Length: 264
Image (cartoon, rainbow, N blue to C red; front, side, top):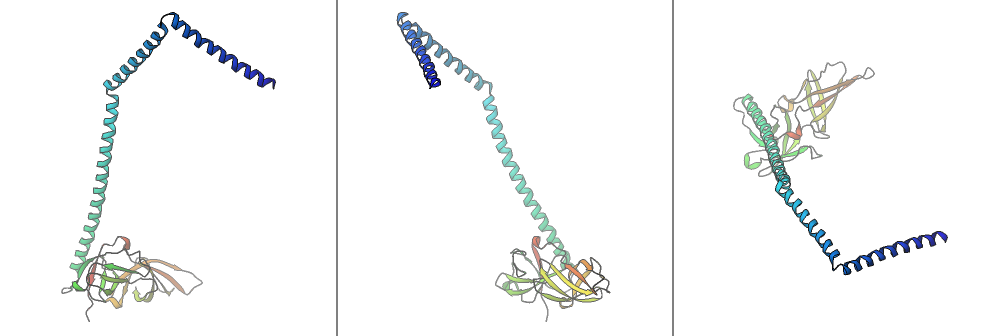
């Protein structure tokens, strides 16, 4: 209670001093004919003029204009950089597409004389279907028929046409999940089981010599290649070895394929 009393007493004292000072200044202003107010107004005017001069000086120096100009230039440069990056990306896409089309032209030139087929664009993501299928932008109206082989630009059979529409066709991958195909690697006949994404596996006797990179061909497709040996795993405790077969092309980047009709 004593502390509270002292604090209140101190506050009351300060308030009394401030009140006395205000009354004194007010009385002094009356006695001097308003000279106190005149001085205060003069000070305010001087401060206003000084701040105005400082603002004018800053504006006249061009500091704010320079900053605004730099910000505007930065915006322009940022927009130009975005445009250049977009053009670079478009150029890279065109370059990749051009290289793939050139490879397809080379494939067509390497086919036996009289072989007729056509190039078709891939119009759906190859990796998006769990069934190992994708769409191409050609169909009945373009002469596409079921059973036609679908080749990559490197000449590998990636699948066969299993259904057709007027302007599109469904392609089922050779290595679709759960699909099997009889194939030959080296001198060994194998049964390749597809696992999707251009991959398959096969089990062959350990006594057979299988090396990474060997081509794997399918008699059903006229001995055309369907992949290469990607890996060989064997164990001394097993009489067989596991062979991993891969399609040597990035399916996600495949934009064009070559449709080769099967002659009966």
